[in-house]
Image (cartoon, rainbow, N blue to C red; front, side):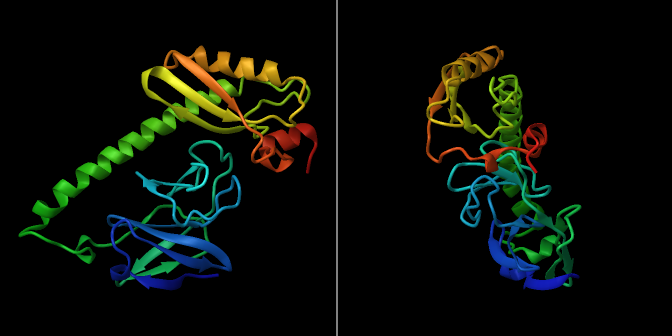
Length: 243
């Protein structure tokens, strides 16, 4: 499909979102300051809508299990999601918002004058508003970097039966950094009676505690929701010959 009008700039306030449909795909149109993003309204972890998820910097967080996705690229920024969401191209034409099913290359930008202005001058109103957004973005980047470090370490842990690392198998449901170098991992096993379970849990804890940034790692096993092959990455499927 080509570009189709979905709303006016004035209809979407800063931080606002609008449920739309792009070529029969549920999507979200989101505004952050003068930038507009359109992403698929679907968490790739469990198929839940992202509609009510909080915004963290330039990311949206799944309200159910906490997976985060970059609004610009659609990339999954943390577990339990391992696959990104689709992004859609957005254009601003005469204060009207148009969306296409083509992948987004960059967020669309509207003129600053399209935003409600209070105060005597543009500088007086825009400078203070930028600071919280910048801080939130820096925090989100730091959290994403920590998540990448944790997942890289956990990829060293191999399921001895399937010979695939536990991240690509989809066994990691979430990794949370706490105060004082504490890290908490929520994970599952391929089955409740997995004979390699104790070995996998021990190796996961040791892999994280070898990191300089981690003092203690706690592993919490859960069987809800139960693991299924659908949680595996494409790399794991290729390794196991699942197509």
